[in-house]
Length: 135
Image (tube, rainbow, N blue to C red; front, side, top):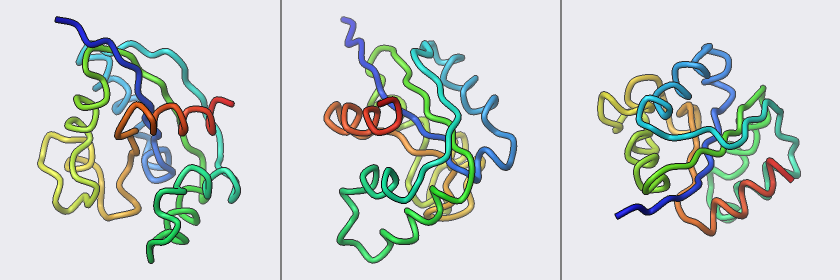
């Protein structure tokens, strides 16, 4: 039974600076996901604050905003069966040091904020986050 979904991934400034955009996107394509929309951009403080609004009361909020604004990012809407849960499995634990080898963060990430990639964790997050990037 098919559960076709869309989700958002954001390749963060560390992933862009390391030249990993193609490698990361190809992992999703190799898994059978389709690219629906793709955008190279840089977050400003306002849009980053809205993007990370769920974390606004956490001690690491300012660090998240500062990091995501520090360079180019790539936003990508992908579509496929069970996209949200499958993509989350593919990217691995938020803390790169705890992410399993074979996941994107496990293979390329080095920290908590500098963890290469973001992915929406629900349909609601996808809708909110994709509107910020692909307004």
